[in-house]
Length: 422
Image (cartoon, rainbow, N blue to C red; front, side):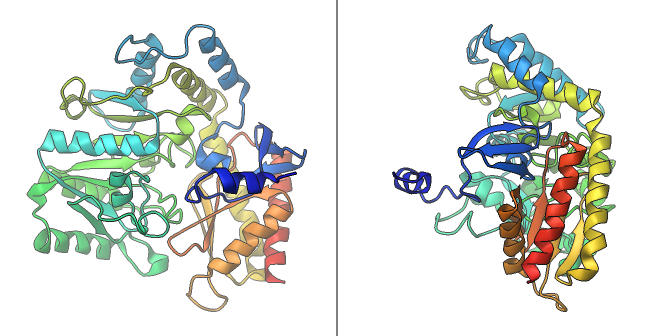
């Protein structure tokens, strides 16, 4: 009999990478069972998508209720009330005062693309500033903004023009926020007139780049600089959004409001939906028909998103994210003396990571990170690596993970760290 791996290799493009060879059969909260009945603890959550857990009963019920009414009309043809109501909720929930408006899409990359479209249309300027290590999608504008070549840019030809990158402040890798701000000043002096820059886009906590949090005060300085030059500030909250960092949105940690916020992943609780929310005058700049998409704001996904927001509030998942993250970081700190490869343990809320260097040096150690991931998978714990150097393990378990399953996972993690050193 042909194996699933052989079938996959014969049928699916090699460019669609796979972290594991687990073929899911069913899932519940923080657990996945494969086709052979093996149980796994999920510390990936579909890359921060099912923050409310696999198949949360309220999400499932909301989708079932919507299925009984209709599945698709295309909001631009025959609109529906729950789309409007979800926009109202996001307008109220995103940081910042004053009137806001929202437009829905299907993927995070679409949200980013449209945020750039809106920013360019509103300002009449072409330039976009992004950061090294940032991840903003795999479409041409998305990968042009993304600050990581392998595997996202390599071999795909010229990137979109008028996109400029700055170093992301990261003390562990020798970049202070003063140096990052100085690089922005040099960019404006030597490469692009700030009067030609439409927007600056930044993840409050870099996702694929390594779970590095923007340092205290940095967002405030960016806000001041953007205001000085009438540049829009775009917060990419695709991975940081919806309670992951201990706040509904990570920008709440910085006390700064972006002009536009992109979101996806955790919003739909497992169904594809994304959004751009921003200042009303900015969002209203494009003419009717300039924004949208056939599946944008699909009614099933909108129903799921309403349930996700209800669950986050009713189950106090922001506070739970903080508690889970503290427990995880404490356990990692407790074993750090036995694992000299650990260079850093970090992350707000339950958006946490551990970074590995070669023991006794500052040289990144991607091999060790991958060994830890492989050892954990042998013990039925699913982990993800990330980082420009591939030397970081990120932890993205559902915020609803049961305490006993979480404790089981932490024990497996400790065993995997020790086994990786053997």
